[in-house]
Every structure is written in C-alpha cells, then in structure tokens.
Image (cartoon, rainbow, N blue to C red):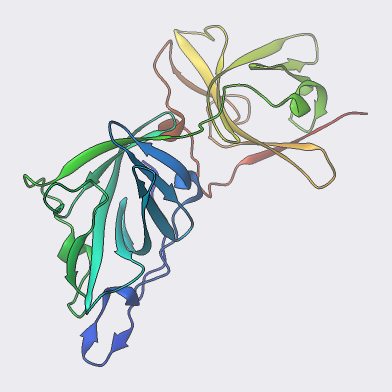
Length: 275
C-alpha cells in the first residue's frame, strides 16, 4: 500500500495546541484528482493539501489535510464557527485499479454521509491518536471510491509508432494503441499488453507466458519532454532484463495501485526518439 507523504509540526498558541497547527500535510500525487463515492451522491476532490467533498452536486465543503500517520489522514474544515470546527479521519485501505476503499475512523453525525464532519472544539489537544479510532468500533464506516476518469487502457496517438530508444539491448520499440513491442537485435521481441491505466501510468503484461508458468509485467509512466521526445519511466524493479521486467505466476491478477510503485521511487528513464 502506498503511503501518503506529509510534514508534521506543532504551533503553540497560548496554552493550547490546536488542530490547525499541524502541516502542511501533503497528499501523494497518486491520490489526487476527482473520485466518486460508490453508492452515494458524494464526489471527493483530492488536491495537494486539501480535500473537497461535494454532496448531491450542491453541498460543497473543503477540508485541510492537517496530519498524516501511515495511510490515515486527519482533515479539518477550513473555517471555524464559534470556537468549533469539523474533523474527519480517513484510512485509505485496500486498492484496486483506479479505486480505493476508505474507512471513516471517527463518528459520523446521525443520518450523515461518510464526509460529514464531526464537530469538536478547536481548543482541545487533537491528533490522529486522539481523534481516530483504529480498533474497528461499531461506528466505523467503509466506502469504496473510484476515479471519475481513470482513462482508457490505450496509448495516446502522439506516442504510437516505431521509436529508437535508450533502453539497453533494444533495437527499437513499437507502441500500438493497446500494446508495446520491444524488438531486440536478432529479431527477438517482447510484446506487452496494456492491462490497466491511471492517467499517465500503465501496467503492461507479457502477451504470452514467459517460462516456468510465469508472466512478465512492467509498470511505466509516459510523458513528453520539452524537446518533444517521449520519456518512458519504468517504475518497478524486476528480476529480468536489468530489472526492467518483473514476474508473477501465470494469470495472477495484477493491480496497478498495489504492484506498481506510484510515488517518488527512483525509476529507469528511457528516452524514445526517431532518427
């Protein structure tokens, strides 16, 4: 499971420690964007340091991310009223392609949604350890969120075609709509089919079984350099081909969020170019 990165600190105001003293809590890039809460009318918009919930297309509320601990985020309303504020504690749990389960770890107001805040005084000592109950009490709610626009599992037309590359041992690379072929000197080629995509990240799987009942897979992001050349970064570390190709048992399900390191993990940069 990917962790959310944050900077944590304290600011003393008089004799009180207030929740707004923490920060900034920085939400990892993978989680940012618009999400639908399944089986409800709630939309979540995750930014760098804020989360906005929109209920039934009208009721909008914005929260600052004020503390992080593992995959737990403590959120606070951006405005306080008469010495009170609203807080929400969310645990990001099991993931599937372009989807995440979230647990609400503090009480939900009666008849409220998973994103309705709990009202508390601003002048109390408040941390994740104080607010978030992680022992599965009866009031914990679980929801599944999915990206509003996860992206089709296909490469942009701008990237399709035959490319030379800086990939060691490769003669050339051919990118098609839904697959990528790496051709080696001597004619041998490796064909990888796009299994799932999340924005610029792709999970590619070998089109045929490799050996010993194993499949190969590769996690890549594709971006355009200022020079106009595509930059393909191989994210995962594998067992074959200088680490560029990882393996799993034949037909074992792969999840982009689980099997591909989506955060600041050093990758193998491959520049694609044409003569």
